[in-house]
Every structure is written in structure tokens, then in C-alpha cells.
Length: 159
Image 1 (spheres, rainbow, N blue to C red):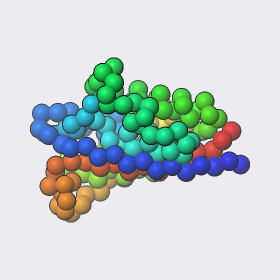
Image 2 (spheres, rainbow, N blue to C red):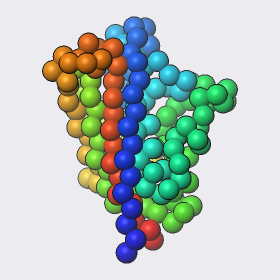
Image 3 (tube, rainbow, N blue to C red):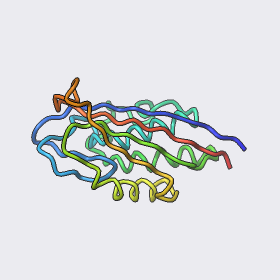
């Protein structure tokens, strides 16, 4: 059995008047991510973890923010394209563990919907995906509500 682990992390600045997308879900919030795409830090971290596990570089290599065709792209499309890359190398997802670090809004009530979206794209059971949320107890840029961070770890199996 060939098993590979990968980790991904993404950060985005938050500003008023923008949409906040996390895990493919639009979260009601007064602030959203500044980004070339829709700024979904959770999906970006999952993409990087998948790419890393399959030794396929990183999200910026495959989907550069200098590409005008990717301006405001839905990150679910990026995740689907990433999944196609790892599937083409013969990998499938065993499990994914994610953490979103955000002072507010609270997002735990959206985690089931996020898991359903991610699992459908990655062709795995939603039970194979964990999404947790935490704060930094008002410390640092996330604590000051200036930004959001997502971390993902994935385990892949070569079929």
C-alpha cells in the first residue's frame, strides 16, 4: 500500500464589504477575504495539502494569481481541478483534517455543509473529512479580526 501525507496552509486578509467563503459555503459576515479568487482559505489549504501529498508542487503553481482567467474563480472549481490532478496520478483520499482559525463569525454550524461539499468534489465519504474551528483568543492578526487562516492535512492512497 502506497500512502502519502500532505499539509497545506493558507492565509487571507479580511476587509469589510467582501464575501466570506469557507469550505465552499458563503458565511454571513461583515468581512470577507481579499484575494484574486473567491478567497476560500479552507479549500485553498486542502488543495495545497492534496498537491503536496502527490508531490505536485503547490496551488500557486497550478493556479497563479497572475492568471486573469482565475480572477474571482469559485474555489470549488480549483479543488475539482486539483482532485483531477491527484486522481490522474492514481491517488484517492483516505482522510482530511482541517482547522480554520478565525475570531468571528463562529463557523461550527456550517461544518457539516462544508464537509458535504468537499466530500462530493473529492469523491469520498463526508466521514473522511474533519473540519474544526478555533480562535487565537484575540492574539495576533486573526485575533484582531484582520485575517483568517486554514490548515489542512490529507492522507492519500495510491490505487
